[in-house]
Image 1 (tube, rainbow, N blue to C red):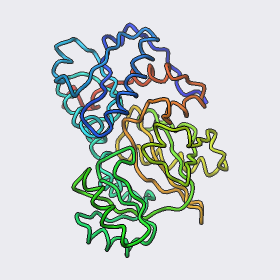
Image 2 (cartoon, helix red, strand yellow):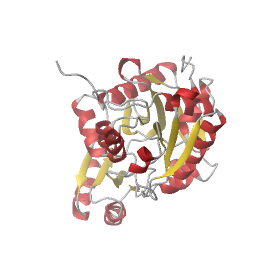
Image 3 (cartoon, rainbow, N blue to C red):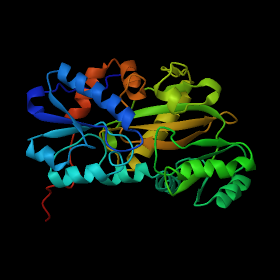
Length: 325
């Protein structure tokens, strides 16, 4: 498949800030993502500069004459609509989804509520604010159960609970990352992810990646710092299953109003092969272990070209500057 048709006028992109680092729990990964993006853009002739949002106020972007931003931030104050809102006020186009889509996607509970209303399959869940509620959720959802923070990424604070006795500790770990904790029905099956690019009717799903982690443990360490995880792309799934997962991912992306790019995580239940949406990432990783570049390579798009194409699609919210009749 041809992923991108357009040729990019690099000079027209202007001075570019690669936003990275920040103050979230995913700072370390953001610096890796941002460093990779920065090197890729410079290799293609872009006037790109590193900008660590933890050490500089965002208003400095306008003062320094930046024309657009590549958001390589992950987690809070980068992926949750806050930076997007600030850039809207500054009038500086940025990569990825806008304010509303970013804020909703960062909140796993709100995301699941919208998907459920829209008829998109997602595992059953309970929102809990205490260890006793987590234990009650375990009796209702069954074993195993996933316990995780509502607003966190990279599996930080996540526990797979297999007994009632584990609920209290799992809740406390998740609550150390966020006051709201999600207890989610565990879907036994195959873990997959689907990268998405574009907007609205023109959005496209990239080839699926099947993730095979040691003992099914796709945690923070295995995601970024080991080579123990196997990634199959092509996925090896039957063609009709891959198409169904891509269609579900596109529906999830469009329903939240995403644009630019994102990545949906999906479990395929072994018992009946039904796919279930877990979450959607609106500022996906761009490290050496990251999955969107892997899917792009399967389409013949190298890392440098992917970064350039994402940057070229930087924008402000669609309503910005429209005249009212």
